[in-house]
Amino acid sequence: MAIACGGAEQTSLLGDSGPEMDASMQQADTGGSDTSMTQDVTVNDAPIVKDATIDSPIIADSLIQCGPYLSCPAKTSICCDHSVAATWQCVANASACAGAGDIPIACSSHDNCVSQGTPGDICCGNVMNNGACEVATAVSCMATCDPATQVKIGCGTLDPCPSQAPNCRVSTCTLPGYEFCSE
Figure 1 (cartoon, rainbow, N blue to C red):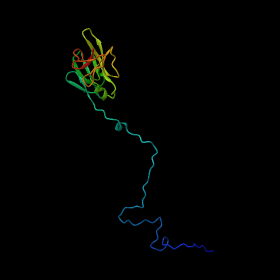
Figure 2 (figure 1 turned 135 degrees about the vertical axis):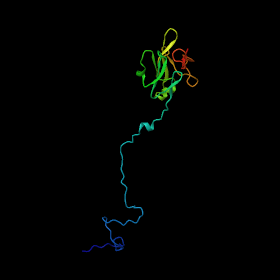
Figure 3 (figure 1 turned 120 degrees about the horizontal axis):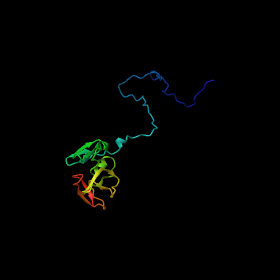
């Protein structure tokens, strides 16, 4: 029995128009781009995780005033006022400033708090009265200064004093050269 296709025209698709090639045969390289190759496509269903150090804003370092002539990078050190010896020194942390009469100073202005990653904090000095004047026992970044036991350090026209301690003046007793808010 013969099968016939009705009305179909003969084409050269399977005809004898040249050498026959099957899928196992390779084409000759003509020097042009090979469009017969396909690219391997990989689908990644995992969420993209961004590196926090790239996406976070870079916060510039500021300098902590450390006595009349020295300054310390706020990101990597603090100032230590060795008040008994009347010397100033940049140290790695507060434990390196724990001698008798030492005053650890982690900031001298709001800019230092920003550099240390707490932009909402202000620089506060813990104070006590020694009979002659109020002296600082430590200075650090805090959300707010307690008006009963602390003063704001590093005040000025760009960073004014709060209403409960409206005056900004230069310390002469315990932190020479530092500005602080007082009544």
